[in-house]
Length: 286
Image 1 (cartoon, helix red, strand yellow):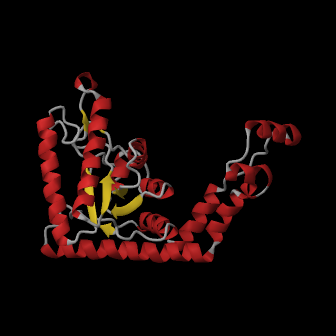
Image 2 (tube, rainbow, N blue to C red):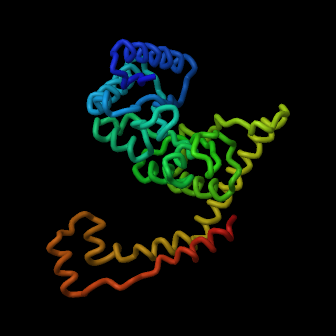
Image 3 (cartoon, rainbow, N blue to C red):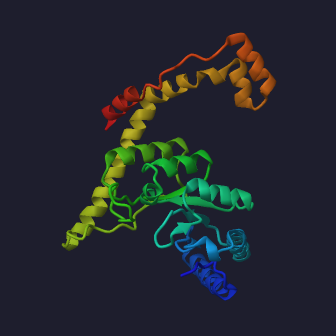
């Protein structure tokens, strides 16, 4: 109830460590390609009785033990952390993709872990369905996708099968642009609606979800191959391809150069983001 790797009682942490060791031993025997850590109780209910700095350090050291044991037994699999903002804990340390990435980089674990994103958790954090997939990919940390979805008007984890073509298209576009997900992939730990009571409903749900992502994949390929939206995005950032913008892109610009540029060119003009145009073109592919 008070966490595993973040528990204030080291006896509990040790018990969790023994369980993870057993899990890694089994993963080795099965030839597992991915191993997911989900910290549903790694957080706190009240700050009054919590040493946050100590708990974060203990969790980092716990992960380092797992990395060392993976190396010791020669297990060739990808370690993944699955972010979630709440349920069952009130405040979980793995709140969203950026929170986890910041934690991993702070403790020097960014080369040992990637993220397993469940978009249903992303929406619980107040983001859009594709948000954490995009953010994890931007940092080179997207390793797998637990492709569940939820009802946007419900503030809890409903673990529904994904059936929204728009969401699937945006997600698959990100995956294509980063060159795939291997050795991770798309997976469902979803369940059918409580009103779906026939055995065949479970098969229909899996088939429908995979069809959704298949259509999303085809849509994403068309968007990329047609080049209309990517071309518009490239043009929007074209000021970084030359002059002072290129120096910013390369990381060689200074604040003094920024000032000189403004003295010579004055205030910037207002440029439309053309959001409605992007949305209209995107709808053409759906």
